[in-house]
Length: 244
Image (cartoon, rainbow, N blue to C red; front, side, top):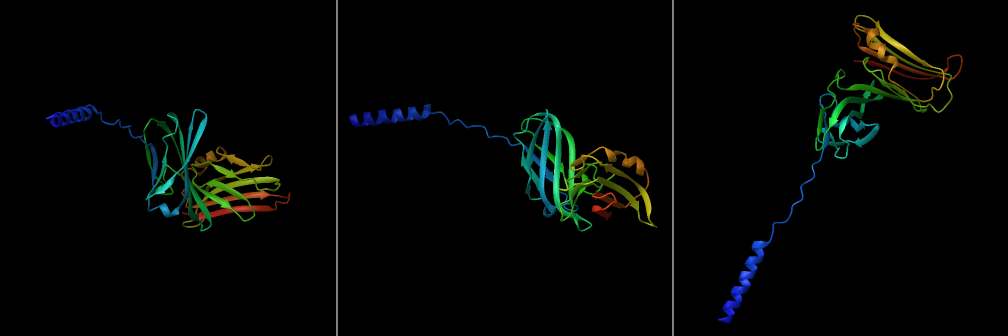
């Protein structure tokens, strides 16, 4: 009889213990904010992308992240980005070449309001004339001269790297031509520098190109960069001739 009572007491205590035991506390899963760019396979596909970066500019600071290829998209975790209103700059560097020689780049910039646990999704460039993206070209030679220049008239950007030697004058020329039914000049402009020309980034000088070209049709792009090293005009040249 005592054994039965003892067993019953133990069983009652065990049941009481388990009935009072609380479910384990589950920590909420962290929500990841993702930036993604879906590539347009007919124009710029995953195999043509070398690298991609995003820069978040807000309150005078910058946060930079590298995007990784995931299937047909470029993705990055942006959970650490500061919330608020700022500027998002997207860069895609590719092995897609212009005139079978110079590598292409694409840039897109936009105002964005970042909120907690919010993801950003965009479409990649779909054509040369995709208004959401600016196509650019990296001009480079074996000596060390290098420049990045905008291709469309609505993008004024150019950058010329320090050539590593003295120059008397630096010139950047952009011209647009129509080559159907003859050769006709549609419009262009020339930027010239004679002082402190060793490292130049400019987004202002070529803003007049759309007005200079007006409604003139064009299908050919000419870009010329002259690193003049002597008074007679001698020096080094980077140039691109590209038909659309």
